[in-house]
Image (cartoon, rainbow, N blue to C red; front, top):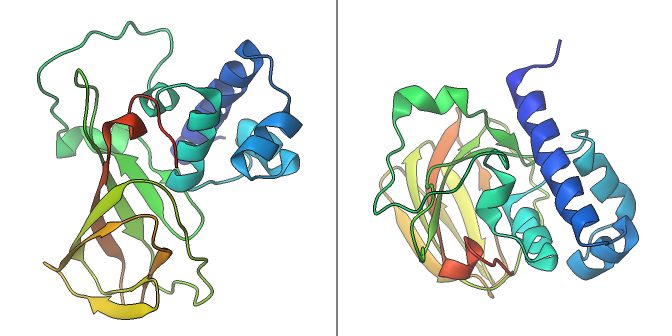
Length: 201
């Protein structure tokens, strides 16, 4: 039987495939634009491969669709509102999306003209040492809630303890990994607004 994480990955893949086909794009064309292989994108669309937030931002940018459209029911009408509320008790119903070394939950919903997107990242114990550096447009603010993380920005490496916060320009190559003896949980805010409306990396 399909578990909740697999179900969410399948739904995400279906939305990606629908958006790509609506725009008349082949997997090869989307892969070339996003810097990803067509084979990998095919597995993501089938719900068989995990992908990162950075990849989702890049894919949605190439498709010209809001990032939020990949996370919400496309049959549900979007009604703008002046606030959003994400209750902890409701979060398990929105299964985490696997991104390889970590899982993430989208915390922010939709506001008119949003200026940021928020995520809860969860890193299991025993993170790999070979974590690739990422570089993309925008800014990130990371606040460590639990655990111990090693973070690298450019040539600088440092350790984050609970309560530590780092804010940086995403053009600088960066990565993070869990170096603690248990899971690590981190709040991530991403800006600017087009990451939520018309995202690009």
